[in-house]
Image (cartoon, rainbow, N blue to C red; front, side):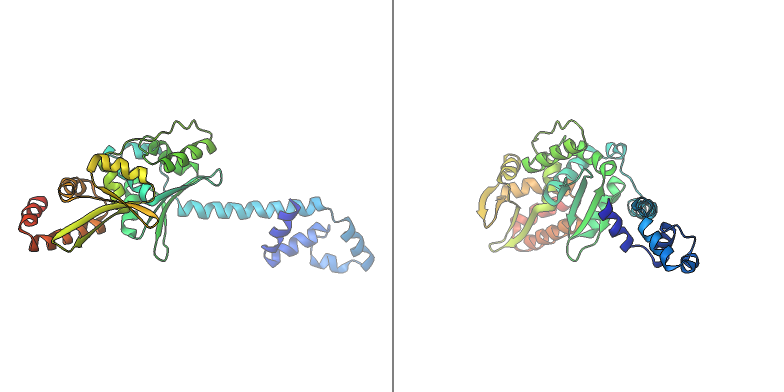
Length: 297
């Protein structure tokens, strides 16, 4: 506590320091201190108890903490009780978990857990914020973050996500979070659903036009087991790249996946890019033109 007291004094205003200094010495004011003789001042310095200074330091520290708490409440004034998540449609909740497993995380370094979503497209984070009814968005240079700080905000997500989580890594992190928050974990890996896969694609998916009048659509991820689970549902070809694995869909698999994607997508930026690529493809390939016209009309 002595160390904390010293650090706290450094952050006080000059007026607060003066008050602590003179009242701690048993004086009413600076003038009272000035009226004392040299011997009296020395005697008061010696008798200045640590308990008095500790009390004053804690008094000012509590006021400072109240101001900090008030500021944080303004930043995160919208709470996310579990009842709000209960009102989200099941397919949209599955999308949310898939997106979080692709571009999200959970901080369990302290007892105060934090659920995070990361994304370059800040509009997508704002859509998620509107969907769940809360959260605080911090804007970065290239990557933005939507966070839910503390047990009161993060626990509803943890309880819901454990019912749908697919990857082993995220499963273990949810277990750790529940243990820290003194809840029974009961977390296990699940099989991905189509909305979950679309959410994961909105986070980790990619599309590009290739030579030969075709389009490449796939997923990139370090965890091959997650891609293997996706492959069982939508197909694709697994290949190893530098530091990651890729699951690329074949033409027929792309045509089977796209109607599901357009039904459940939430990433407007990725969807618009994909539609432009399909329209360009339709201009060069009669077979793709028939498919794209049926898909978009």
